[in-house]
Length: 450
Image (cartoon, rainbow, N blue to C red; front, side, top):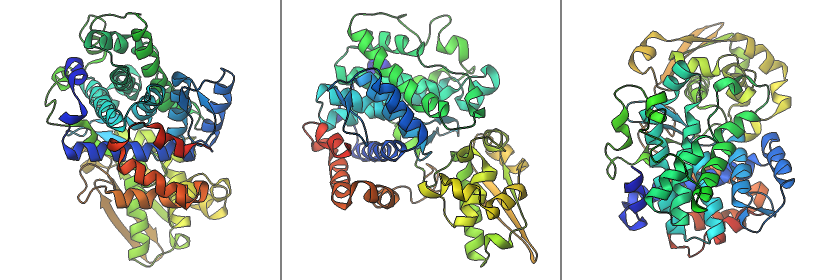
């Protein structure tokens, strides 16, 4: 896998892969920009400031510049803060976590440092997705790592960050293998962070730390530091320690044919991904039946067991089904402002509905899509009940009429234009769409400064 990805060049990528990768980069830059305003984004920058500044790499929504390792931490942490960053699923429904908020900040930080071209950044991010997704698929995805080992598999996107960084640094295959080995020990985390009260360590664990580890591992390898030659297949390595039996071939199956970027699930609600189908179903039921949130007496949400366990009655509002579904029904939408509104969360309407939302394991979904993100929602009112099943939320890889540039521009326009102005937003969109033609990626990242 490493040898193939190191040899891969931008010119080898099909045009659809290039477009999809550019969309993922643009989407993640938007996530980092708005996430910089949230507690984990602000605190990450505050912490990074104690480490000193450098002119290597840019920080989204800030005029400050820092070392590439530090920039990856800040932008990766901010990039997951708003819960707007893409999730990912393999063809067999294995969830792999949040690749973009790890791989894109790492690659952008190194690309800034190296004054890389836009084409090289696209190539690096596409390769990073392959490495991260394939590694996580080989260990069975999020559910296997959680149930068997108590670990968050998404940390292994750090391998993708390392590969992306190594490509931008021009490292050969042997040195890149060392980068992967050096990275791994700096990124792995147990799943306890899901129980925290605020979205702080979750942002770090899913974004900032694995992004940092990938950049650090690549720079360490470039400086001559070494790790084990084969962190994947060695005794005590990734496959031996965590691998789900029979999935080892996921590392190489379909390389150059089945591109991991197509498994990205873009988010159109500001919440944990297992919540999206339920929100889409509930909002559709209210609109189609002329109902208001005030008329809802109870709401039941059927889900696969793993997804239900991730979002049922959580302390963090943005990954709590009861909180986010209630907010969405009261507000009529679930964007950045609604999901992060303390006033809305504390309102009497949301407080009432929160107590009326019940999550259960849906036997049909558990049987047919145990690793899926579908939801069956039933709303009960004084006049009866209405139900809707959403198998794949909007933006999911298996949803027809998938994501376009127009949809992504619409997603971000209402969030970014008020913050950076219409002209800068238009420049950001134009530059992202033409990324492969940029001689220096700093002409793109510079738009995000301040």
